[in-house]
Length: 296
Image (cartoon, rainbow, N blue to C red):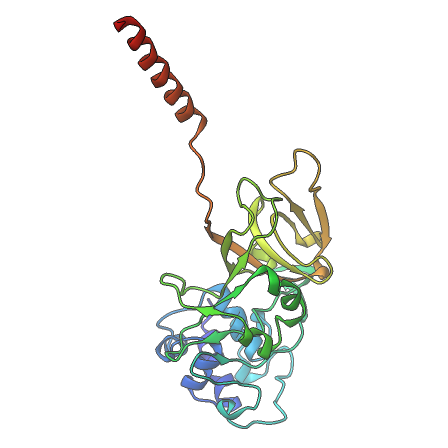
């Protein structure tokens, strides 16, 4: 990563008049983690980098590649109100959660690496919650909350109304728990299963992996994807498609609001014994009956 990142991080923070602890809390990070970014002792992953860029209302390319203290590619947007972020009325604090203020709508960018593409950048989730220790929670989205989530994923009060959990081992990104509905992904996923999913940018989507899509018109989809974002498309597949009940769908990228990569499944339905096991049981039964007949 360019050495401009650490300098830019310090520059932008001071320009907003914030301390390291205040910015770290707003981003859902530990203060020493953010401090290490500024001192070049460590570097953020892509998801955290996206959050930082969104927080400072700047592109990732400018954040890591341009010396902003000497003038950037675009003018830095000053906040109309530069009061301390901790006292900002958009932040809701309680014993359970602390909510971050919503950011601007998704902004289009035109550079992916060194190649020009007219593609839409997906910002990190607009609202996250953190516990009293500053650790980011995992929001649970049950089936009954899906309709609300489609319109309320950027609404602090709606997100606060959902259950939030802390789980060990989930510290390298922003996570959500979604409940599965229906049998379109059988046998991979069954009705009422829960999946833990990590936020992903569209450029990170890998072909034939399972993701949660929050779409603007078709609801929350848990499907297997084929990524053609350079062509403005996402191909959505169901595992249970032998009868044609769940046909493949081609979505425009503009229709997708959020993408979450499924990393784990929770299920209440234990699988039955495999076919080989069943055959062994039958053979054992037949042998037992044969021995009985021979002994008579």
